[in-house]
Length: 364
Ligand code: M6R
Image 1 (cartoon, protein in one colour):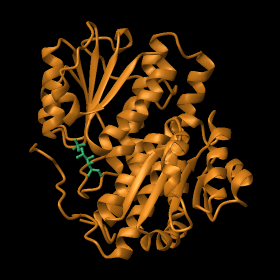
Image 2 (cartoon, rainbow, N blue to C red; image 1 turned 60 degrees about the vertical axis):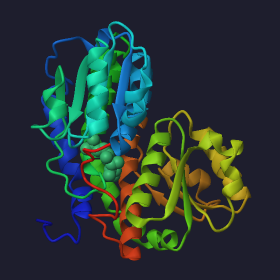
Image 3 (spheres, rainbow, N blue to C red; image 1 turned 180 degrees about the horizontal axis):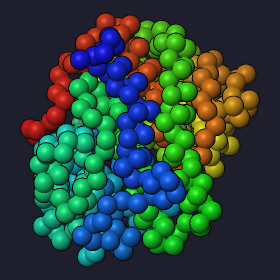
């Protein structure tokens, strides 16, 4: 049941501290903080290239992981949506590993992309939430996300547990390749361990996000901006809003703004910007200033540092906890989910069963 929540989606958003913790417990030893995945019949750290394929929100989780694998493990990564990848006849390298991400484990395009990669001699690793699924069965190795059943059509806790699992995989791969110094390993394990508590503190902003949803509910278009691993989060935020509130939304890499989308900005368009304190902070700050200079209505999601820098220039802001940049995608996912949720409730849509959509897309 919904445990007293109005919708499954809201219940599932609130389950995230718990299920992220469950996923971490599966992959991090709580006694010595050592990150250890189950043994695979192949070595991901020896992969010549990773090919990550998925659909929708699962694809955005893979897109975040691309940044992690490249920086932490120094492995070349290709990431694509399954419906394009499966027909592209992409040449795949010898010694490559292909990673498939799916909540249901039944998405047809993802499954067919998996079969293609298998024919091309790739080792197949899948990250799946449903244990008894076709994708899990056809893979050489499986990492399970511990989200539990996800009922709402809009994916929330499946996404953050996919990110949790992928972070652990990127870190163990980087460690095996000697790409991560031991002190950094300790800091990473610690940062991951703190995510459930930090996620709970993000949920405490629910009322504020509900107020801000009123600003989005009357808009025709909403933009989401981010850079680095926050770019896929911007895409995810826009998808969430579109699918349940039916408001047109687009996610962009903030640095791409001046190559076109900045023309959309006026004082009617809310622009949600995700700005954690990472190596791209100053770059995003200038992008926010560009939007403000064109009277864009910025809703800033940032930590204390970001609010200190931009709080006075933007229309609205929500202060998220200061965190290691590695785990920022896990935490910044929550406010974009809540914004979409409350906007949809205000619009009176069927939040758990949005029109035209199915939970599991087993047809082409
Ligand atoms: O079951 P899967 O993870 O393979 O599903 C992939 C997408 O269909 C799914 O993430 C979809 O985009 C969600 N409705 C997004 O909220």
